[in-house]
Length: 289
Image 1 (cartoon, helix red, strand yellow):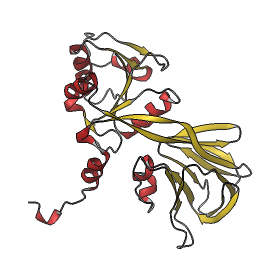
Image 2 (image 1 turned 60 degrees about the horizontal axis):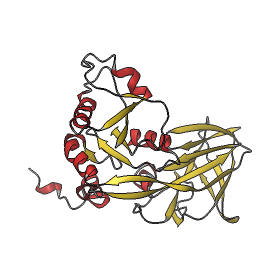
Image 3 (image 1 turned 30 degrees about the vertical axis):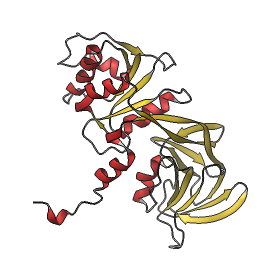
Image 4 (image 1 turned 180 degrees about the vertical axis):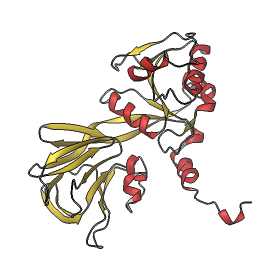
């Protein structure tokens, strides 16, 4: 069994968390490599003594059985982008931040590895969406968003579903979110939370001029075509953390990707439990001392 580790290190912070994962994998006599960005930094850390035996992940391949993402949701998104069409399950370890994706605490890494070795886990298949523009194709686990650039004026967003005209949004932008991303940017703009196994996408306008332009849940087999009009010559398209400037005359096409991201889940870290904990559902702050 072989693991590829992705994390984000900062030489000004305490990085003992990554070494705790190394120690646990060594204890269980498991092979592992580290992403190139972190590999180059580890040897420069003051508290690294060279006791661990690992190589650099030059490029992910099917020689790895699992990817371990150590940090927060941003690291998960970067890991998912590296996995791409490879069917490698990903384990999210949370380093103490607000994480809907990386929801397993790093402190129980020994228990997690035992469960992996004993196949005591389940796989959650997460929808990936892709956006095509100006000859490029980019993928996203959370959302694709279209937004204005270099202007305080609204942009006009003409939207079609399967070649049928849907609406023209006068807004700061539009978010097309997967179920996984429904607890992120879309939620902050008033969009609904969607369970990961639902086969839906949600279109959420960003600060629409018309208050009757509400978030819309659609089937994920719809093909979305978007055209933009505005005062500037360019606008922004973002795919998760990647941002691109696009010519105002360019059309955007969005659809579900032909593959899923496989996320490892454990019973105690189910999506429903995560929602309750992160959003404090069922908690009455008035009774807390």
